[in-house]
Length: 189
Image 1: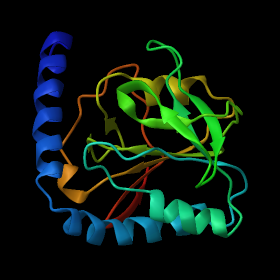
Image 2: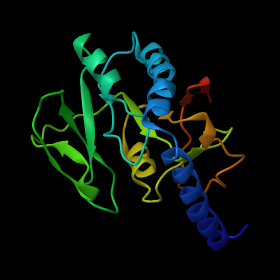
Image 3: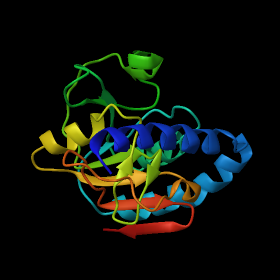
């Protein structure tokens, strides 16, 4: 498949997978989110450093209840911020209750600009394949960010099992996740 065909296929597949995820009821997403949160807690337990999280968008797995638990246990977290639409994300320290402001696509971001380097990053999945490659929204933010971070954080893709596909047709710029977590369990690359 040529690069233009892959781009067209990915666009259509994103729409299909987002619609599938958004068709789930909030109660179904919450129920599927419980085993995802449990698996992420197990993965990050005992690992030092800051966990990069995200603010849920378009019916993604909602990490906020997990974040409340992790922060209460002493874990520091950070939210990603788009600074340059063609560059990597910037992670800013954040804790529940800290002031937020509207970022790109009106996704909340920390008002305070305390830049940190996470040692682990949660990346929301639109789709994923058996090789651990993540299909995102198409902006390339997480791939550019993971590629720019030194040392590279543990990349944890989180989503629902129904988002699994045979392949995302990985391109040279795609970076595989180290672990994919769904309600069906965690799969390490």
